[in-house]
Amino acid sequence: MEFLWTGWTPIVHSAVIVVAGYAALVLLLRLTGARTLARMTPLDFVLAVTIGSAFGRTITASEVPLAQTLFVVTLLIALQWIIAVGRARWRWVRRTVDNPPVLLYYDGTMVAESLRRHRLSEGDVHTAARQAGHGSLTELSAVIMQQDGVLGVIPHCAMGDGSSVLPYVSGGPPVKTGQPPPASAPKPDSEAGRA
Image (cartoon, rainbow, N blue to C red; front, side, top):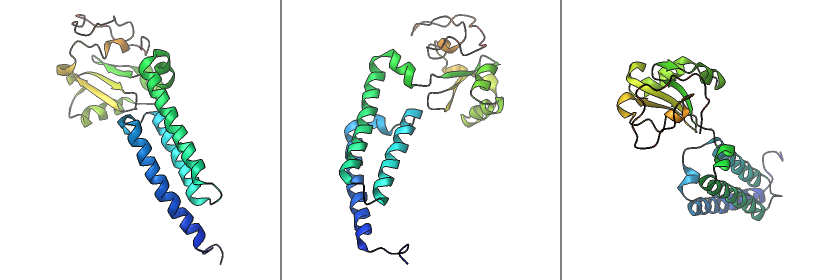
């Protein structure tokens, strides 16, 4: 019968841990800003799973003190903040921790190598177009897999100077913001040329 009830001590312990841990987590996330709660990148996902694991262990295991859990969570959030600062300051940190955007479709051509490398199909590109309210790929200039894995759709009318797309086109010329794109941009054939 011990597996059903072991007394009030574990229940009180869990209640105190949940309330104190929740309050501490909300406070820490408020202090670190909205970036911690924004769309999740793979790095953010790892942080969320690790924090969840730390709290889960503390809630159910009475031998893990609250101070240890708060220390672990504070350290994890501090590491996230340090990496965010590094991303903002140094390109090598961005290249190390971020997935770069990947061009999947450009100017009427599917980028087969990118689709294959990221285990996507042409159907996924068509689905992204439909979800963005487009009935045909002919209405689109590009489809890009963003850093968070979402497929972004860029219609012809929104392409502008192409400065956010052309650096990801293989052999594409460097485009300065505010400059018009070249008259005939090269067709993509790989992911080469990523920033």
